[in-house]
Structures are given as structure tokens and as C-alpha cells.
Image 1 (cartoon, rainbow, N blue to C red):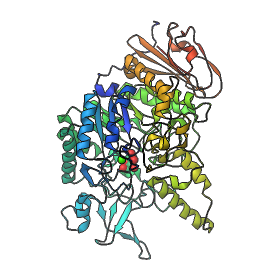
Image 2 (cartoon, rainbow, N blue to C red; image 1 turned 180 degrees about the vertical axis):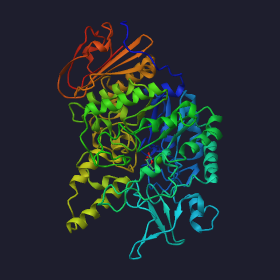
Image 3 (cartoon, rainbow, N blue to C red; image 1 turned 135 degrees about the vertical axis):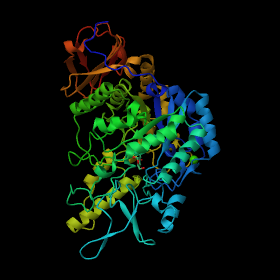
Length: 597
Ligand code: GLC
Ligand code: CA
């Protein structure tokens, strides 16, 4: 093995949650066991062997608690019970047992920035100004304009469109909701709220859950006084205000308290969701081991790569405008996080899909018939060869793609999509004076960016509705399941995306260098090829990925410190498998990727 020019600066401690492959389940669309069109807990139990076989170590369940599903379960009406549509607590116990029996672990989604407006806490809070729980939520008096019209307490825009404030006629005050009006924000300043949240966490931990994914956890502390946000878009009545609620003044204090009182007393893992944040220093503060807060967070910079609108727009959680992205920017972003965490000694996540993002093969690959499988495999290589805890989203392992542009607006079910559409339509009606303004460009954006694409039912086989349900699915199944894009067909085909993911996960398990090694980006300015090398105490790996349809030859250069004897351990073109690297020149065909070890 050739000696390396790279100085190894990073020697992280090993932990089960660092090398784990975590599979995210969106329960309503995973598998329906009883034909009511809604995926459920017994449905997940029935597929545990499938997940184990793929190479999954940990399951994360999106919310399955009692919920009116105003935001698909992220509006929780009771933290300590299961929504009957998903099953019962006994079903959950059985699922946990099945997961543990197979040597896997189970994470729950902790959604405590807000509750449902149907939660008993909110009902009580809303009942009167003197309710003991009034202060559990964020209530404020109205403002009035010069003409005496009632206005919300500030100009904050909800992440799901419109004002972030809802008027309550009964008690004559507004309450804050960063998301839809059915999701009132909890007031974390109140110690009773924190105690109640901690109690809920203990409920699940004592029942055996292995940790939490924490929903928008960087939004729990708002800037005191809730000042008006700067007007960045004067055409809009309400303004993005993440400046005042993302990474707020007390968030670290709250998380330290949570860690001290709850998390540190269990052997569990945590991952926080931290949108609207691109500064590595801001991200690191949540995850520095010495800070004793969270194990890792989901940062959004990669997800924001194709985000349309203003250049510096970070209000990206559900942004529905698309822009063309550049491979050089993607490389810069990946390398920034791989390097920063290494230099500063904290841990990060790897994900390119989740229930809030359109399908990666449609965004970052090429979902046309000729390139779809190849480019999905390129993305699998990218994801499985970096440092961080790896998250795979349901359907990613079979290369599921966005549903077609021909589907009508009715097929979009997400409240974020629908609210955005309504708001934009009203705006255009006013602007053009037309009852039916042209909305085609908006639907174009949805086809590329809407969260709905991640939420179509998982495609299990070629039976009606892709075998997801014997009834009518709550959401339409993508048409391509009948053309071989389903689990059963892919498991039978050794050349499928599914088999590729399985091999890639196995390779990652076999070589610690991928999980723990140093990362060096090669060819940073190349517009087609993403190449990097990994090094860990003499062990070396090289990843070379062509992100274009065109053949390309590159010279990795002397700085690569490449070892001529390295061989292709994984590739989406079979004929190069086990070929040795030889020199520093590599020629790749369209969307060809190779991993050398
Ligand atoms: C998170 C969830 C998303 C949800 C939002 C509000 O971003 O992932 O699905 O709509 O928070 O809870
Ligand atoms: Ca069901």
C-alpha cells in the first residue's frame, strides 16, 4: 500500500450508532396489514426479515402517536398512545420485541416543538386566559394597524404558508404555530412543559425504545420579545423568521437539561433535525461530545442545493421552488461537512432522502429509463462511502422516483404543498385579476420538490397497488411498480438497485475506513466527476463517480496518493469488478461509479 500524504487528525471513538445503518420508515406508506389502505405496525412487523436481510441495524419510525394527521402525524394529540389506524401499544411492544430479537434497534420520532391543537394540553390552554396551562403555549395579544384592523402580534410567516399566528376568538389572543395552525408551538420557557416532555420521553425509554429522532429540535427556543422579522420580500405580507426561532438563545440550555435529566440515564442514541442552519459552528454546538446534548443532527445544506428562490434563502424545510444545481457545489458541500466534523471532533449524519424530500434519483441522479438504475447506484456509492451515521429512507433501496408530471394536483396530499398552492393562487388572482391564473410553473416545482414524492406507498411487488394494500391506498402508488420497480422483482434480479444497496452496505460494514477514515476530495473543480479518497491507519479507499451521461477520463493526479494495487470492490458496471487501479488515470462511462479498496 502506498504511503499517504494525508495526516490523520481524526480518530473518533467507536460506537454502535456511528457505524449503524438506520432505515427510516414512514409507517402510513410502508405496508398495510389489514386492507384499510393505511400502513400499520403489524405491517412493519411482517417486514422485519426483509429489513434485516438488506443490512439494516436500526429502524426509525416517523410518528405513530394518536394524531388528527393534519401534518401526517407531526401533530400529536397524545404522546403516550398509538393512533388506532397504526395499531395499539401492544402492537408496538410486539414490534419492539421482533426488532430486538433480530439484533436491531428501534427509534421513535420525538415531536415536541409543538403538539396537535387536539392535545389535552392545548385544549386546556385554550380554554381560558387563566387556565393553569395557558402558559404552556405561546399566546399574545393582537396588534392593530392605523385603521384599527386587528393584526397578528408579529410578521412571522409560518413554514407552511401564511401567518404563524392563529386568532382565538374565545379568549381574544393569538397563539404561535411555526407550522400549520393545528400545530401550536409549546412554550419551552415554562419548566412544567419541559418536565412534561421529559416524562413522555421516559415513557418510551422505559418501554424499551432505543432512542429518538427529534423533530425541528433547533426551534424550541424563540428570541424573547418575538420581534418582527426583517422584510426580505416586500411582496409578502409575512416574512421568514427563522432568524428568531432557529437555534434560539436557550436551545442548548434546554437540550443539556434534557440530556442530564433523561438521555444520560439510558443507553440510547439521538439525532436532531436542524433546518435553516448552514453554519458548521451552529451545527457542532448540538453534537460536541463535551456539550452533552445530542449524538448527531440532520443538517440541511445538501438538501438545499436545488432550492429555488433567493440565494440566501434558508427557510428550506418545505421549499417548493427548484433550481438547477452544480456538481461542484455538491462536492463543496459534502467535503465541507466531512472535513469540518473531522477537524472538530464531532459526529454527523448522512442522508439524501427522507419523508420531507423528493426522491434522490430524481433530484441528484437521472430518472430517465436509461440512467435511472445506474444513477441510483451512484448515489448509493456516494452515501455508503462517507463518514457519518447512514440513513436510508424507505424506497431509496429500490430506486423509487418522483411521480410523473401528468398526475393532477389532487394526487398531492401534503398540507405544505396544498397551502403553498392556495397562497400562490390567491396572490396571482389579485395580481392578474384572473379567476384562474396560470399555475403550471408551480406544478412544475411540485413535481420536482414536493414532499409528496417521498410519501407514495412502498412498492412491494407487481400486484395491484404494488402489494402495499389489498384495499385502496390513502395515497396513489407510483405507476412504475408494474415495470419492475418493486421489491420482489428487484430481489430476483442480481443487477438491481436493491442488490446494489445490499452489497454497498455490506462493503461499508467490512471496511472501517468508510465510517471512520479521513476524507480528501479530489478534482474539486471537475463538473462531471465526484472523486474522493478515504484513509484510516494505512487502509485506503478511493471512490470515483461520474454524475453525467457522457464518458469521461480523469487523471486523479499525484496528490491522490493512490495505490496501484487497489481493486474495484463495488461498481455499477460489472465488467470492471476486481480490476486494479494501475495508474492515476480513470475512464468512466455514463453514470459509472467505482469504489476501490
Ligand atoms: C419536521 C418533519 C416534517 C414536519 C415538520 C413539523 O420537519 O420532518 O415532516 O412537517 O417537522 O413537525
Ligand atoms: Ca392498515
